[in-house]
Length: 382
Image (cartoon, rainbow, N blue to C red; front, top):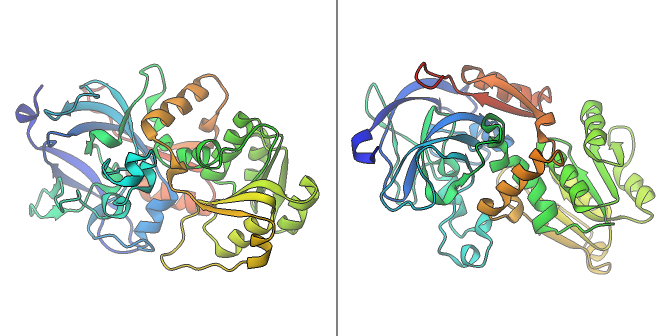
């Protein structure tokens, strides 16, 4: 079916209209895809910490806006210039990049020069949107991470849509597009943790636990998870951690140094807390690497001992989306999952779409590590 024949459609989207306010399910109109875009019927979408960061405007975006950036669904229509995706394909959506800047051209699209406007600007790069309110026909900001998947249907770009096998459980796969990819990619692609290395994740949420699983895949022989929630630490042991540290009960830096006889080869700061970043830096050994993935309020600064970084040759690395090329990396994670080597499903709990605010609250309170919203199924899709 052609894009022209399909035309605009009516959708249901969870809309943020005020900073910190609950999201509201609203009827809206979604325009047809442009030549380089696709329209996707969302099956399920993950809820990520970044959704809450933007809801509270710690990362400012224009409003009203449709959030959601871990969507998985079925392609319904493709633009005239799309060549890699066809109607009927099962896809996971990920971050958006321009494809033309130096980072993109050199294999680092997650560090695209246009990362902020493409993913947090609330529109395409030219300022246009696809979504309008049904009642007043006023534009609603969308294209959050190139998708805005807190919606029953989305328009995304061919660049940020990744085809996945139909044999994989589609409703489970959305988190691979951001949170899970970030943790696993940081270990396997950005820091390149090697077999026999020691690794510590500061924070055992979705990103940290994905990193723990990836460190096991990489062959790290000492894998440490640091958190304050006993249930998450227990799960970390189940997923591959060799040691866990409750930082409310003991000094994590001192304990990491004891476990590793001087410091870890690699650490990953996943909490978004400046004081924890200092711990992650202090916990690594000579020539060790500390990766930073935890999202913080804009303008947040951190302190560390310069000589304790310079003299032992420590490296501090900022990482976005695991520094992965998603079209290659997400299928790898799917294959690892299907082989039983990357059981990220143990982090997940499903919610209905109308429970979006409950899912966010459960994520923030720690009740659920990775909430996934299931979209309603109409009679012709059942």
